[in-house]
Image 1 (cartoon, rainbow, N blue to C red):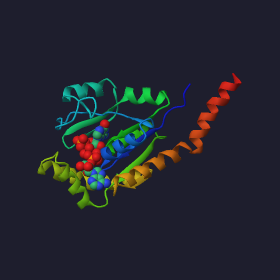
Image 2: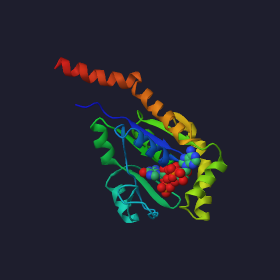
Image 3: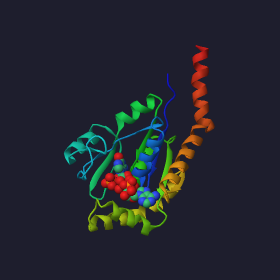
Image 4: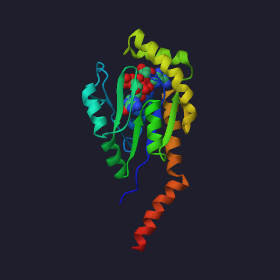
Length: 206
Ligand SMILES: Nc1ncnc2c1ncn2[C@@H]1O[C@H](COP(=O)(O)OP(=O)(O)OP(=O)(O)O)[C@@H](O)[C@H]1O
Ligand SMILES: Nc1nc2c(ncn2[C@@H]2O[C@H](COP(=O)(O)O)[C@@H](O)[C@H]2O)c(=O)[nH]1
């Protein structure tokens, strides 16, 4: 049986660069982990693809998934639901493959409760002006939404204390290297390694 994969959770304010960093990591080392595509009720942005960027669903469809225990976690963020489908995460971890979640802070805390052995990383902007600049330049949100997202960002940054690591995204390539180092070290943590040896020893005994 394969060793169980590791759950990696990346949070951080909207626009800090989570998606950009994750895509750069996958480009660098495509075999290292699988990205868990989230479900959302928000409108599709130009260029986004259903099933790749998100599973875009109606509110009723999303609520039915919740009622059927289909979500690992979910949260409301700026008037929409966002959540992680449970089955993909479970199946992928069981195959021994690491899974990468890119989710906001309330959802991350639900995952922390359910999967305390996950690795929780908070991506921070160099400062709030840089964050605003990135959201504006991305060009996906109107002024009102940008204001809501920046307000949320202040609350979210306070939640950093609940994470294992804080990584500043000043430059994408540097942030990528920092996160890759964290993941590499986490794989070497004794409790994780011991778990795998226990399985090996158990298998020999039989
Ligand atoms: N280190 C960086 N320096 C400058 N710009 C950056 C950096 N990282 C990302 N960006 C830019 O910031 C914008 C927001 O990035 P991205 O969409 O990856 O953020 P996000 O955290 O995934 O946002 P959301 O949570 O809203 O999905 C993009 O236009 C991206 O190119
Ligand atoms: N709790 C969850 N949060 C999620 C999930 N997928 C994305 N997100 C976060 O929502 C905000 C807004 O995203 P946007 O695509 O509308 O800009 C951002 O912080 C995402 O990280 C999820 O499955 N669960």
